[in-house]
Image (cartoon, rainbow, N blue to C red; front, side):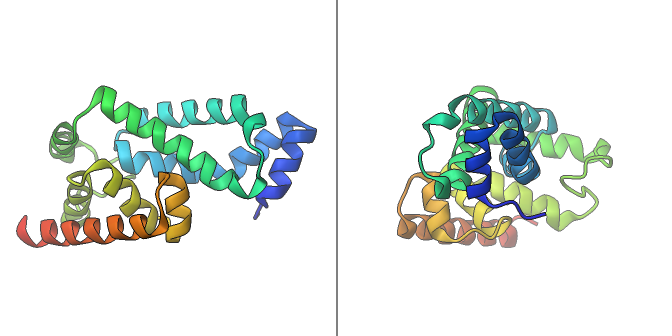
Length: 179
């Protein structure tokens, strides 16, 4: 079911409970996976996702433009993920957690630890600076256009494009030099 952002916006103004259910239906899973790609840990992703939707609910009345809903929610989620990373983990610790988790994480659906290339790709992405990591994930996994990425990262489309291409080159270099 494809829910239009304008319909969500109007429903939130009319009936906040129904409108919020529409938000959760449309954005719940994509926002979880966006955050999960950044923080890696399922528990951390759930915490950041919950904080994201609490902020969305509490500050929805500040949103004036229904066309900005998608970018606004992703921007809040990105900030929540980055705040969590800044508070709790450094990139090296995340990389080490992937290494230490490899042996006993068969039940984790985020990364197939038996797939060596998937693990290397995740390590390559986590080695990127945070802004490039966000841009890379939004473009590579979510297939967002540069104007939408720019809205989420609060940059220009050309900056988003440069960040993506720099990130892509770093990922390629990492993948070819770290066997």
